[in-house]
Image (cartoon, rainbow, N blue to C red):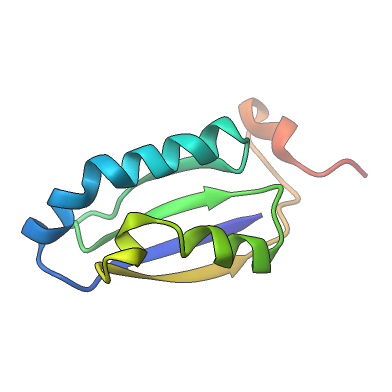
Length: 97
């Protein structure tokens, strides 16, 4: 599983102009089962994406397709982790033993 930390590189006015295309990108990857959660950081200096069912290399390639990336609006830091505990509502996300 991965946490993707998105950091904006350009002013929010430029980022906001790309939000509709970015959300369409996110929707495709939610539909594919790759993205679990996403949203802006607080304060809004970037965003966070929780991803699974993908390799690091595939995730890196996928993020290069994000309009934020293609337009030079953001950079991404990928943190891989191995979840082993979860709240009851999220236990189905844990890997099978």
